[in-house]
Amino acid sequence: MIKLRFKKEMQTPRGKELLDLDLSIPSGEFITVFGESGAGKTTFLRILAGLTQPQEGFIEVDGEIWFDSLNRINRPVQQRKIGVVFQENNLFPHMTVRENLEYSCGDKSALGTIDEWIIAMGLKGLESQKPDKISGGQKQRVALIRALIRQPKVLLLDEPLSDLDMHSRLNLQDEIIKVYQKTRTTTILVSHDLSEVFKLSKKVFVIDHGKITKSGSPQEVFVNNDVSGKFKFTGEIIEIHKDGVINILTLSIGNNVTKVAASDEEIAGLTIGSKVIIAAKAFNPLILSRL
Amino acid sequence: MNKLTGQVTLIESSEHMSIVDIDVDGDIFSAIVLETPASAAYLKQGGRVTMLFKETEVSIGKNLSGLVSLRNRFKGTIKLLEKSDILTKVILDYKTKEIISIITTRSAQKLGLIIGDAVEWLVKTNEVFLLKER
Image (tube, rainbow over all chains, first blue to last red; front, side):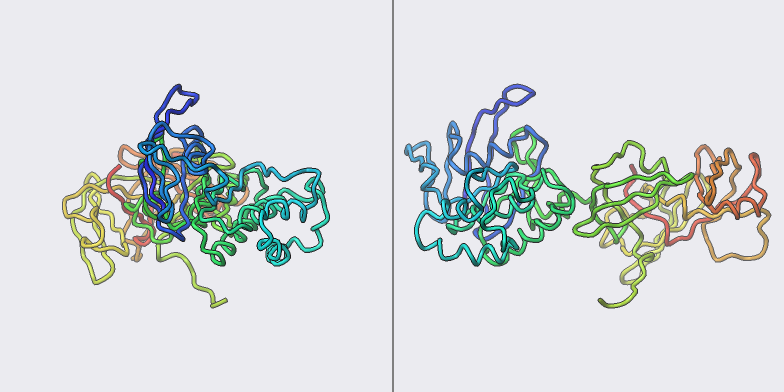
């Protein structure tokens, strides 16, 4: 169990705001922290990682106290057993993929697992490449292995997929799910991508102006349950094509891409990248066959 | 998306679904939902609800005679027609509101629709979404 409560003054584009959080995360859970930029998501991760110190508070991870302002306890980053993947991978450019991984192993025991990880993450054949010779998605796979290889207690993912194109993003989401199912590492993902939140996490905390405003399953938090539609999904608009009096929208929903016809009035104010809920009556969908 | 608000006048439920009658300025609409008053708070006799239905689910009838199974059948006047190759958008005056229907251009031509036509517009009960008034 991770128990956190702390206060930290943040500088935001709107001026000074107080990040004031109090939450518990059961061990082995995959949770998302969702919010607009400047809401305090990254500060939250930095405080947990020990990169930023709160004014006051308490952090306990699986019975170990990492921070306690009353008793002046503040474990340094190296002693916190965390793995972090940032939006921008910070692989060493002069080292190969394998060297980057070896460097992060720390002790010998992890070294033996490098090959297993390389195969599991589809990086076989790229071990001797330097980071600038591999794709953005592949770099983030290396960064993910690097974060996990020392078997951290907590994996922190700070918008690790937001710089990737749609295809790589969907692939890497699948990899993250696979790795989580394999290791069951307590994972905290920071994201402002709704479809990602729905796909990856069972529980989401919404942070707004430094406070948690909502928490629960993505369905509970984001889907307006007042609507009677039973066939309801959250997705992102990838393309909008106008064809006569109607518009054809291409949407990414989970790991599927779908098309929906919509009137001008229905899509007023929406652009590529907008997050939408699409709904149909439960009577409409056809059941074609089992896969 | 068409949107109309009215008052629930009747709810008929089975174990898992309900057919709901909604009064909009004297016209009675019907919607069928996989909910019952026990599962959805907005299903309340006398309560206010909003109905949503897609433009492409609204049919247009002119000089309709005989019987049709559609229960939602109301009078409107064509205010505007926007034609494109395949589809035509028909904007109707309905009471104080606008209802939009998108039908095939072939149908619009076959019906000889013109601005000012008095027509009937129809929508199936299982195409109407219900939600708390908004």
